[in-house]
Image (cartoon, rainbow, N blue to C red; front, side, top):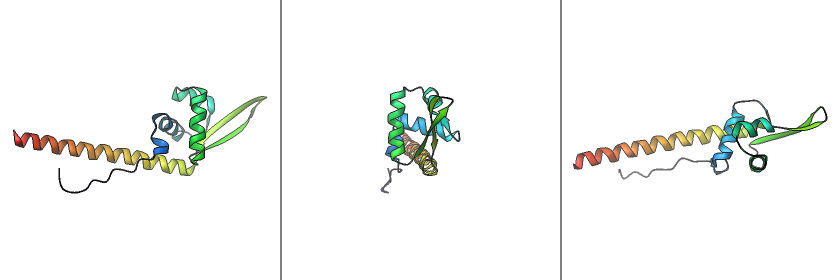
Length: 116
């Protein structure tokens, strides 16, 4: 390892949890989605999705719209512009983390080979 200090990528803890990341990624693929479609697409329960929505809405990463289809209440979810930016930054940080780790692993592999 070189003497240079490595700065870990800035992962967004509000997104980093796998379930929240899954919901953010799902919503990044559409303009807006009905709660049920997000629940089914992400393979999670109503209660889990409700908790995720509360967390991401508090962070201003998603917007919630409530209305009716006929007489049935519906909830629609979408990423806010801030949420889209945060997701892109988080994904870039994950890519950087993977690249740094791969480079360190390659360096360690070379050092082991040189010692042998």
